[in-house]
Amino acid sequence: MKIKFFSKMINEQLGFLLPKILLADLLLFIAALPFYGLTVSVPAGLLLGTAASLANFILIGYSAERAVEKGSAKAAKRYMFSFYLIRLAIMGAAIYAGFVCEFPDPVCVFIPLLYPKLFYSGSAVISEIKNKKGG
Image 1 (spheres, helix red, strand yellow):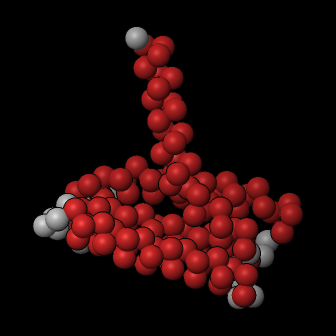
Image 2: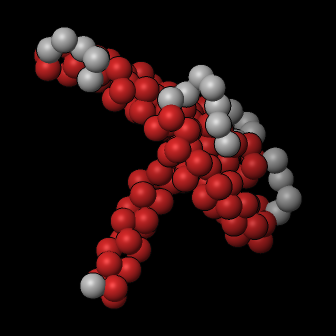
């Protein structure tokens, strides 16, 4: 998958992350069926949470790439902090919508926000285990 608007680095990381996110959403949906039944709230929550998670991830990549182009460390820190606030607002709005709106389930909104940390940490652990076995 390659999206022209995004840089090579963001596209590579989305290529790593997106299949895992979609699989995790599917597994979560299947796991929620016995508890929620076949309702709209689980897929709506997963969709909202996944969208917020991907927006957060893309904005991290974009802001990190642009911050290095800033002239000074102070300007880069200010730039990164402003994007941090934007990302925090997006995730907060998604969680708020999960609690306030009728359709999305709040738990199903929150869990996808943890996906990038989970998948990158898991990938590092697996890589470390493979390195110890091979070396």
